[in-house]
Amino acid sequence: MPADERAPIALIPTLEHVRVPAGIVDQEGVVTWENDAARTAVGDLVGRPLTSVVAPEHVPLVERQHARKLAGGPPTDYHVDVVTPDGRRRRAEISSVSIPEGDVVHAIFGMAVLGPPRAGPKAAGLTARQYEILQLLGNGASTEDIAAMLHLTKETVRNHIRHIFAALGAHSRLEAVAIAHREGLLS
Image 1 (cartoon, rainbow, N blue to C red):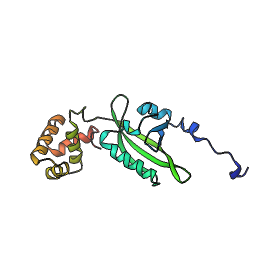
Image 2: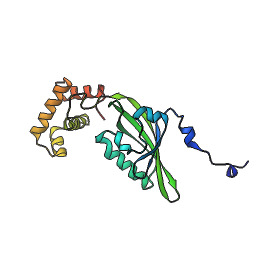
Image 3: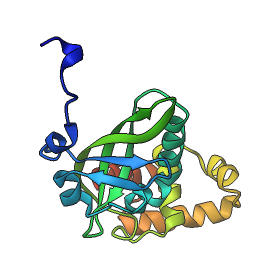
Image 4: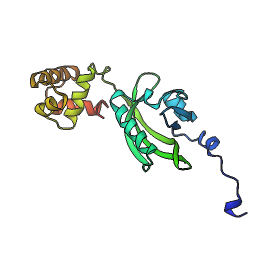
C-alpha cells in the first residue's frame, strides 16, 4: 500500500509505554497528557500547569521556552530542576517540540531525562536568597557583581555568603561551590 494511503499512526498509546517521562502541554501551559513514566517521576499533572513541578527559580525559563514554541520556534533542549512528589529536586533535561494544528501551535510535546535526586536549598539549610547567591557564586560572580545584580549592599551579600559557608561547612567560596556541586545544589 502506498504511504499516502496508510492510516495515520496513533502515537499516544505507544508513547504511554516509553520509559522516559513524556507529556503534552496545551497553549496555556497545562498538562493534557503524560505517560506512566512521567506520573511515576513527578505525579499526576494532567489538568495542572507544568510549572507546578518546576523549581521556582526555573519557572521563567520554562515560560520562555513555552512562549517560543507557541511562536513557532524550533525544537529545543534545556535543563531545569523539577520537584518530585516526595519534595526532592531532580535535574531534568527537557526536549520539546511544537505540535502544530494548521497554522497555529496546538500544543507542545516534551520528554525529560531525569537525573538523580538533588538537594534543595531547604535541605542544605539555605534561604531562597542564599540559594540564589550560591548559584551566582557557582557562576563565578564577585560580591560586587552579586550586589549589583540583586540590588543589595555589599555587606548584605557578605552576610549571606557567611551564612552559606556555615550551612555548607565551608571556609571559602571555592570550597562552598565544590560542596554545592557535590551535593547537587548548583543549577
